[in-house]
Length: 308
Image (cartoon, rainbow, N blue to C red; front, top):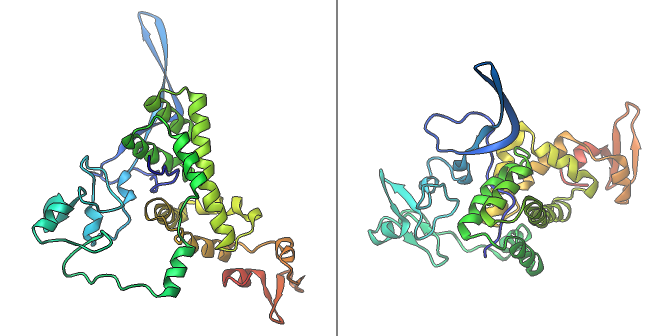
């Protein structure tokens, strides 16, 4: 079984534009209705319905032909494979069919491109090292843990649960919704479903945490604040791109812009700076300062530039 991803594309909270395909999901909000017939009252409770737009799984620019990619069921696809449907010059067909007709070609890495598109240049050793630094690859043990937790799901089921999981990952939907969907598809009871989901979420959360600490320089004590900041309405597009990169491209680098934005808004505490062996003090006007290379500067400026 392939990797399950507890993160996916952004889940909109606003009503989508007319004509946008969306999948209805239930949330935990209850609606109560009382009906009287011949003087007898009947109390009914139902759950409100919200929706999430799976279109945003694809993050290619609107003018890129890859942005039209969908699977055979019409759901947006983040990658273009042989059976992926794409639209070229107003015609929709599989990438493989367009290749046969000469409208697309495949490079030696298996990636489709237009014949007019330049093939990607071979990355330098330094570029390859930088790319490896940002790769989102699970260790074998973690991969086995994920597969064991998802036992009982078909490949289509994994995709469906992934789409439900996006709302949970971005703080838009309750985990109980994901548990109910998992239970429906596997036959496990809710308690077992919640435990399996928690296991998978833990694996991918650890992956994100370790990357943010080891490669982006955040302190572990800052992670909770960072995630709350990243889930803010003003940052949802950046978070969506970061999450899509982790899930589909197996690259964590999308989190970099979010970290820079977070650090520009939030300076690390003096306690954290001191814990890293740096000299600190407070200026006459109350600003937190740190000494770097013999110079004093505010911790906010130092953090924004990635110096601490």
